[in-house]
Amino acid sequence: MNDSEQELTRRIGLRLRAARHARRLSLAELAELTDGVYSKSRISNYEQGIRRLSVEGAQSLARALGNVSAAYLLCLNEDEATSFTEDELLLLDVFRQVDAPSRRFVLTCAEAVQHQPPPSPAGNRGRASHGD
Image 1 (cartoon, rainbow, N blue to C red):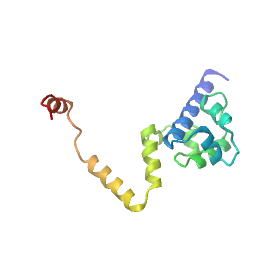
Image 2 (cartoon, rainbow, N blue to C red):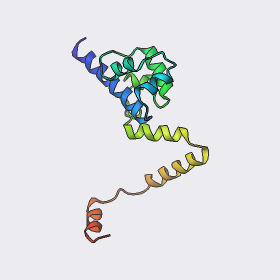
Image 3 (cartoon, one colour):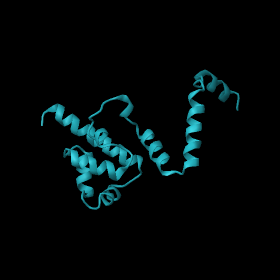
Image 4 (spheres, rainbow, N blue to C red):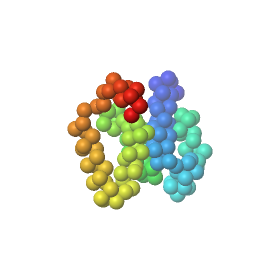
């Protein structure tokens, strides 16, 4: 493998690990979700960049994870809209697991926050210094 191929393999592994961590799954738990198709050591090899994940493997693991697509895992779409942080993956995972009223609450909170100006760093320091 050349350097760019090794870098891609490493990035794929990092995305797989981040998606697994966002679901708060151990390697063994993720392996179980694949119905034994992938062992925990094989998944670990993917995460460490030792082995390159295949398209079929990415589809299977994405299905088992439920919080990412195969295209995301394989770094096929570098669009900012499909590049998620661990926190974003966790939020998406929790959102998908809760009932409809809880989803509506989360969306209402997101909409409210979207229209608020960001807090001023100077304002936060000022309040803290007054013992509030």
